[in-house]
Amino acid sequence: MWSQKVSDAALLVHYDEFAKGEKAQRKRIDKLTGRIPKGQDSPFGNFPNDYHRPGNFQHTPRLQALGASMVMGVASGTPSSARGLSSARDPPKPTTAFRRGGTGTGGRAVSTTPRKPEVIVEPPKAGAFARRRIEGSELRKFYDRNDLPIQVQHTGTANRILWKVDIEKLDYHHYLPIFFDGLREKDDPYRFLAVEGAHNMLDKGGSKILPVVPQLIIPIKTALNTRDVEVVATTLKVLQKLVLSGELIGEALVPYYRQMLPVFNLFKGSAKNTGDQMDYGQRKRMNLGELIDETLEIFEVHGGEDAFINIKYMIPTYESCISA
Image 1 (tube, rainbow, N blue to C red):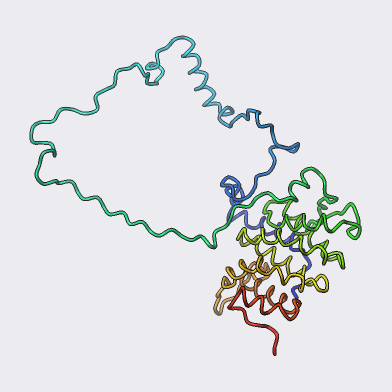
Image 2 (cartoon, rainbow, N blue to C red):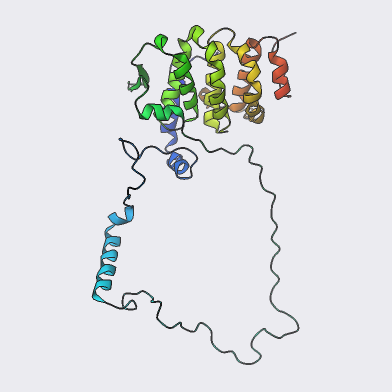
């Protein structure tokens, strides 16, 4: 298995900082287009619905002067034509002039107007690999109202989670699905808390994880169905950790392959073909094709005797990794 000193959550924060030079406004554009949820209006929560939010145009000196001149003109009775505005009472100006006989195109037997080009409508795209809109998670709501016993501990190399309660004493039926639901977040600190919190709880969960597996299926399916490369890769890494965190967990996931594996089948062939070149980004583990192959092999090894036939049913191109 892959071993690293920096956690997956801290690596995501580092990669975001490195990507700011290439795509500085990526997250801002995603928020404006509605692909990822926006944050709160203020540190104290959102503004009321009936609150009038001042726009940026009121802070522009040029627009303030223009608005003041328009108000003064209306108050002094200056006509709209003097202020550079057209009035509804002004008579319309003629837009065309009279033509001489024989100079127009009407009444001729043959039209000299060029034929309009035929518009060819291309078939629409299916959008199977397109990113879906990401809704706000439960972890975002719980963290905003301070209902989670965690806080971010800022250190020199990478951030960590400071737990206010011992992890062994937590109610896994309540907290573990919340952290798994936050795996689809792309904005910090929610993403960092979700990924790091899920790994910490899986490390020290032991026998508490197996009874919670049915509650984790819907958050996992929701994260995979976003079809965002970063979210899907993060979810696959957590799935590998989930299966290896205890006994019988791989077998408990077999009945839920129909909810998870369709997205696996979609991105299974998205591995990079580098030829004889070196892929220097392989340490990031963001190649979905390789991650999916690793996850399916872990599913088969730890899923019992019925794992392969169920994987083969959902992903026909999968070949067994266990020698007969």
